[in-house]
Structure formats: C-alpha cells, structure tokens
Length: 152
Image (tube, rainbow, N blue to C red; front, side, top):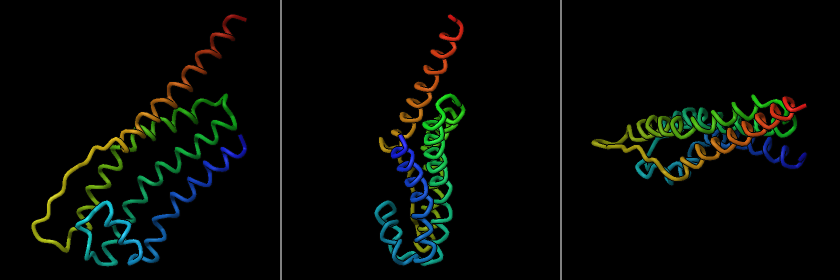
C-alpha cells in the first residue's frame, strides 16, 4: 500500500506543478492549451498565464482528492478522508466546466465574434462516477463496521 500512496501523492504533486510550468514558460504551454481550446492560437503570454491561474483551481481539487484518498488508504478507519475525496471528485466536473468557460473567455480575448460551448464529456463524468464509487465503498465499510460493533 505504501507504493500506491506514494503514486497518489506524486500524482497530486505533479497535477499541481504542471500548470506552474506554463506560468513560467507560457509560450511552451500554449500548444497544450490549443489541444483543448483550438481558438487559443495566437493568444498572448499574459492570456496563457491568466488561463493557467484559473486552471490551478480544478487541478487543486483533483490534487486534494488524491491526497485524501492516500490518507484514507493509510488510515481506513477515518471515513471522512474518503467522503471528502468523493465529494471533491463529484464536484470536479462542475468546477472544471466553469473553469473552462473562464479559460475560454480569457484565451479568446484576441478574437472577434468568438463563441463558446460547455462540453460535458465522458472524461469529466468519470470523475463523478469515481467519486460516487469511493463514497459507496467507504459507506459500505462504515456500515459493515457498525454492524459488527452492534453484533458484538
């Protein structure tokens, strides 16, 4: 389990560090943003940096959720770690969608007549389902523990 916790902590760290690279080197990160926001081509360094500041929020949500999952693995009797991680993962698609709106707005400031659409993808919904699964697992463990304690 130590390796799994290490991987979760490392992933959380990397997810938070990744946009910081773009704050330092916005020109090199622009290609990354163009993959998600094709209209960002031609965005200025300042626009990229603003977009990455916004991106820090959804990345922080995922990072905190991963840390809480790792904490739950190390202390499975503390269900609040799992419940909080589950809530964060279930909220992530909403937070990411709102962030995408603001990022798209920032990255399209150099364009005239641009429009945006909110995308609800299976990739975003996966986080909700994963959070729901963590909630269900921790709830079933908690209920089982209560049942055992009640029976004895």
